[in-house]
Length: 414
Ligand SMILES: Nc1nc2c(ncn2[C@@H]2O[C@H](COP(=O)(O)OP(=O)(O)O)[C@@H](O)[C@H]2O)c(=O)[nH]1
Ligand SMILES: [Mg+2]
Image 1 (cartoon, protein in one colour):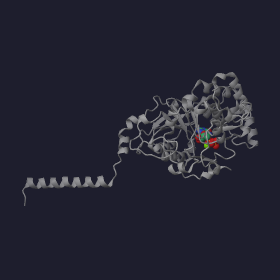
Image 2 (spheres, protein in one colour):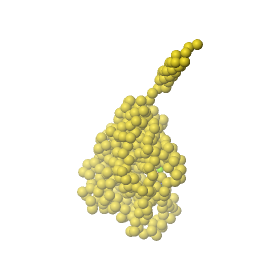
Image 3 (tube, helix red, strand yellow):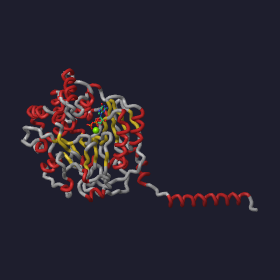
Image 4 (cartoon, protein in one colour):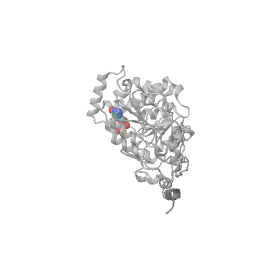
């Protein structure tokens, strides 16, 4: 029998050896995710939240938890994961933004999951949700759990979601009834008109949006079919882009019969706001006399908030708003944004993201080019790609910008 102190020494030795063996086994069987660790350690430096969130908003979800890995920007599409976590210096001052009702919760949940899985889980950009009614706890709980960045919930001020005093509400009501009878899509909807006017002229002025430079609009039920292997916000900033799109098409004429007249009036009053090297050729086939109805589909947009908040854009929106077409017709925010971008931005400030594969019912943008689709792990059928079909305006964009259409486009025409 060994004496007391010697026995304790032996126990201590066993304990130390046991711990060493356990440490060795756990090191060799569980990969140590240093990128993730780094990103967690760096959380405090990752974000700069809006300095003065509006009092009607709730900030949630202070830290992302997934691994953050830097990926090289690439327009060609090859995916290249690096080892360094995304830090504040890698990111742009940008946010996702969604306008939604409480009842949209499960549809927006699907969209968020897609955006996170394909992109944001590595970047943790913030997400701002806006609503004309207060968001309920369920909406906040579900969306906060899904977003890897911070989430903010804003109530839209009533003056941004109601009739301006110069609008004749009886006339507006009669228009809705008549458009309803003619079965024009959303023709009889009052809320849809407030929504289009809000997206056209106000979302970028909400207090929660004021501290950001770029936005990425996400709607309920959208799909992303490919990995996004670069940071589109960064691409916008580094390449001085102010507006971007993935799908374009012709507008339904009955919703905008006098929109172009209103635009021409604005142009006559503010010739100084029109860019010299603009995209008029995308919007008009006769040098500006008439509108060909081409527009970028605004349910997907990555753009510059500073441009939307500029005097040029505000003058444009105010002029259109005075003319009343948001209520007396059913002007959509897509043609309103597109015409502004087409006339007030330089051609090269508008960007087409071929690599971002996108679906919003009923149209698909599936990247043209097989290698891009393979590199980005795309799940879309290239035959569904809308870009080169007859009802898309994307060929015009390529034409006016003198860009060659990507190889393989012929196989995706009607
Ligand atoms: N808060 C709020 N959001 C709305 C309302 N109507 C539409 N939206 C949102 O506005 C966006 C466009 O509406 P959506 O129904 O998708 O229109 P569509 O894409 O033109 O068919 C979506 O993000 C909707 O969630 C509304 O009355 N209130
Ligand atoms: Mg939609």
